[in-house]
Amino acid sequence: MIKGVLLDYGGTIDTNGLHWANVLWESYQQNQVNVDRDAFAGAYTFGERALALNPIIKPHHVFYDVLFLKVEQQFAFLREKGFSMNDEAIQSIASACNHFARTTVEKAAPVLAELAKDYPLVMVSNFYGNINSVLKDFGIRDFFQSVVESAVVGVRKPDPQIYQLGVDALGFQPAACAVVGDSYSKDILPAKQLGCRSVWINVKGWDEATDHEQKHADAEISDFAQLPEILKNLG
Image (cartoon, rainbow, N blue to C red; front, top):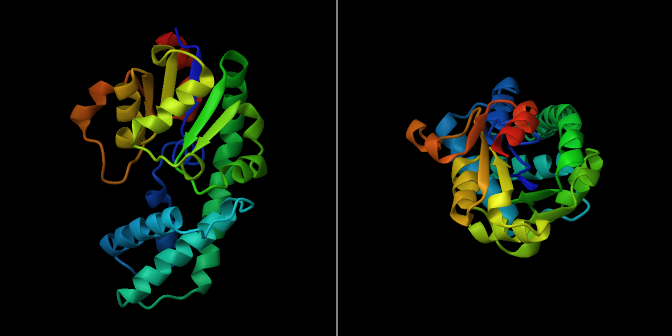
């Protein structure tokens, strides 16, 4: 029986299963940023690492700030690769992606409220030290009894230890905990290593997870709104 739920944030709650690379790539195209997909992929990876390794993000930053600073890093990478970049597009991309995230989180909020009535919820996220500011700004922080954030605890997915910290926060045995996330490699596999149950929100990844791997998730959904019913069935 499921007694507690560990939830990923980025790509799970704020995009309803879309990998953030897909969201940003679409916004690049809508803003006529003339780079190819491979170059963008390199820029995306560079931006993620830059924000993870350097104190660029501050604890008070909300999600728009994260997006602006992330795209700024991506543009710097692309400029170094010889692309002509118009910095005016940074604000447009950040604004559009922030609106998308806020709208998606608003749709997820009633689902989180329903879940919080039945289970203690803990968020486990690879983030930059400001996830609490983001959650408060989007109005969903109070649904979570605890937040385990990589930049704060010093361990990142896919290391199972970050999910172990979430299990410890819930206070249950791993088998009584369900991990919910969009990343097969960073959420589902660590969950299985710990002995947790797992729900994979499988919508659109970014060059990861093949069909034969799906058997390792205990359940699979294509919409965050399906989660309450799926968790009842897991129990």
